[in-house]
Image (cartoon, rainbow, N blue to C red; front, side, top):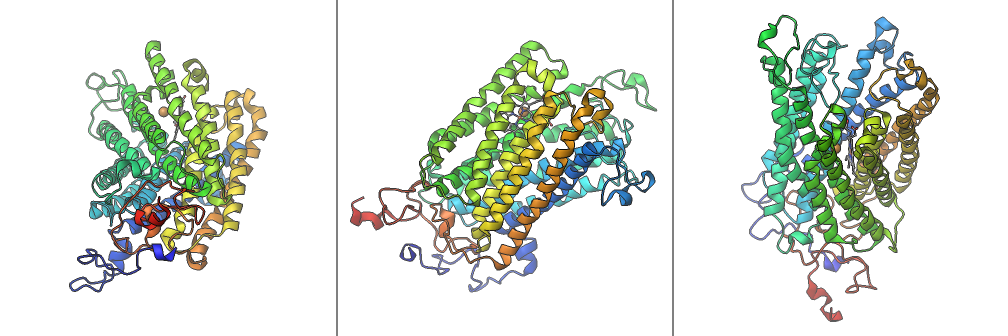
Length: 611
Ligand code: HEM
Ligand SMILES: [Cu+2]
């Protein structure tokens, strides 16, 4: 197809505004710092986010393994790091430290891995390339959104030392419910550590907001000629709707965390009720607040945020499934409308996290109904993914396997969601391991497997080289099996009533016989953690030694595949023009010569065929 690709020169009409070639008068090739560290190029920023969030995935994973160790071998010395961290207890963790572990595990995974890997890494990399733009609308703001992520990491990390005592990290859970999080004297981790945690939370929020403004502006204003809204790939729709969710939901969380900071540092009482005696305070002057207010504000952000953690992956999986099944995406517009419906409904269901907080049953009923309604658009999406796979010329490669895992685990996680949406069922399940099973099936099983697929799919575009299929499939196989080994039994534990967030549930005799199952799960988790080294090896090994990929190794249709791999600063050889939607696979216009029809291929090229 070489004749169809635009000539590989750097001839932007009227001069390359970015000085990609460095040949234009007055444009110096930027130095190392400007190119790789403080770069304003969306692709470099995307890679920075990708590498950073993958690093954080290992940090969060280490917390998870420590949690699992305690649940399998309660109060036995922590292997490897135990003696260094807890010399006074012979390497054993303390109950307080266990609460810090799950607090930081959740915090890191949600705020430092899943949200930034989707929006920060893939949003940045894909948006300009897929809509045919040279870069983001606000490149400097984009750079700032990455560099403000690090102060957030610093705040979360520093929180461990804030009290001058390593054993006092933040420990009120990733949801930071008051009163625990509002009263500095409540426990060792709610001192200065909790304030630093809140500063970190506020900063990641600022980072996300900068990204969100940028993505919205770029998608609305900078699409290539011919790239109408309904010709945008689903990845772009996913990022677009996510950016809208961020823009509307995030200010609520930011306001709430500033209020909680004020309660802790300035003596306000937004979340502290009357009669709550604080040491050294006059009972008459404090109180009047509402702990439940935090839960409302937090979930008003964090339920939409669970879709922020899912919709971009849904979009990317739709693109990848169509490409690797060589079929148009089944039901493109219903896919967009159902995404919109999920996002819209996502704003009116937050109360399903609060069924056990003593809410009025009539209110519980409305939250229950709206939550169950989300199953409808979710069902449409699942149906359409299966419709896309059905009868396709399926390539059973790493990308497809991870995408199929995404679909299947989204079904499992979605179904357990319906269970918990029912108030009477949730009253039992709330705060058991059933919840933990649910959100791991969605966040790990669906989103993270979607991310694994996306890494393998777009890696050739990012680096110019292909990842190893053999290593990719091995990584997939082990991760997939071990995943079910870790998380499927959690449904059973939850039904047996095992509570979440307990350092030692086995002190309650009914749970003693759950220990063996927990031991099995821990070993599966260790295997799964180790398997991620395969991903690292494949990623960096292929980056250095992988097979050269060329522009369009998957024979895909999106605009990104007509740019060089990796694309230069400014992305395209010539500003692309879009003539059709992204899913013209196996199109009769070009069959049987080939089974794909790129978005930027001029229709004149098929005139001979009379198409
Ligand atoms: C069919 C769709 C879904 C339904 C009906 C649903 C329902 C629920 C309900 C009722 C709860 C609260 C349970 C409780 O705390 O007692 C919950 C928790 C949760 N869900 Fe979902 N969910 C769905 C999809 C998702 C998705 C797509 C995600 C993430 C991408 C997600 C992530 C979470 C998380 C993180 C929690 C736990 C929060 C916590 O307490 O720490 N859910 N879900
Ligand atoms: Cu929710």
